[in-house]
Amino acid sequence: MRADAKKNYDRLLAIAREAVIEHGADASLRDIARRAEVGMGTLYRHFPTREALLEALLSTDLDALTEKAKQLQATTSPADALATWFREGVAFTRTFGGVVDLMASALDDHDSALHASCTAVRSAGALLLERAQEAGAARTDIDGIDLFALMASLAWLGDQPAFASRVDRLSETIANTILA
Amino acid sequence: MRADAKKNYDRLLAIAREAVIEHGADASLRDIARRAEVGMGTLYRHFPTREALLEALLSTDLDALTEKAKQLQATTSPADALATWFREGVAFTRTFGGVVDLMASALDDHDSALHASCTAVRSAGALLLERAQEAGAARTDIDGIDLFALMASLAWLGDQPAFASRVDRLSETIANTILA
DNA sequence: ATATATTCGGAGCGGTGCTCCGTTTTTCAA
DNA sequence: TTGAAAAACGGAGCACCGCTCCGAATATAT
Image (cartoon, rainbow over all chains, first blue to last red; front, top):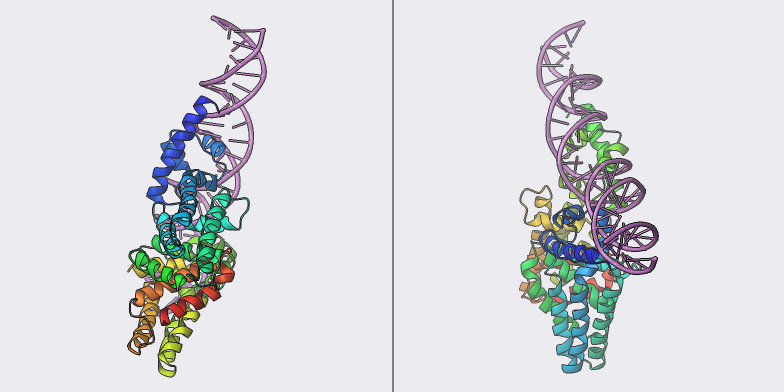
């Protein structure tokens, strides 16, 4: 990558982070380019789709979530590992608003730039769930996709001002249901 | 209301119903006006906001949901009434896509045209929940807003193609958790 | 038939996502 | 150091969006 290209890439990513924190996942791309003092062409060359931009923003966090699952699996009891990771997964989306919609649609869209990261998270969670199920610590009538669905729907609740304050308690309730 | 005005009003509502079923709650208003062979001014005079248009589309269904709660309260056991109504509430959003987001934000936006209908639904559900709680049939660590939140999040799941097929089963699970 | 009150329609404004291409800048070999 | 090839740049332009505003058209009441 050419030196000036890398400079613009980094600058775009930094500005995009601010913009998405402030305005959510559908922040204006034109505004991001403007604030980064860069043309639209430059933005689109580096990030051909909105998903590509968000993937660059989220990938480290998503990978960390995947990694966290493996750590918990190695160090904690099946039930605690699942419960802790579930809470963490719901809390994750708190930084950026409206991201969970894109993650949900990325799951069954193989062409989405977010597809790989999201399926990795889902798989990591599925492993935790299966281990808990084998240990008799989690109900057996749900699977990894259900787990992701429940996490996503709670994350969506967190995006709704009317419900945000109740997410922590409801997450606890749902987590206990899964472990029941 | 003048005769031609009523004609346009009805026509707009009919076309809007088709458009929202086809494209969801953020269907193009310009396109609705075009298909109804009406100018933008006409559309905005009859429905000053998008919420107003959706309110006109949803009000009968929302009122029916509110009414259904009262019927169930009068005819069915507390537990069954709550469970049945919960399922019905989740299923309701299936007709139009993306409506649940607007309903959620309408809850704490007193100026939204959907505010009244949505709070009515919430209150009706809250009564069912309280009756079940008093009968010892429902857990007591959630309230009417939590109930609405859970219904809304499951409705949101139904809007996500990746999860839609699991909504019925997960609704059952959550309903049982509430009754537990 | 006329006058008044209503309703109509669409041009226009500022915004969006996205593409395309002439211009500029970097790089690297001669 | 220089010059040409390669790479990246930026923004004008297109089609769409929500929304407003107002002169023209139309229905109603007298």
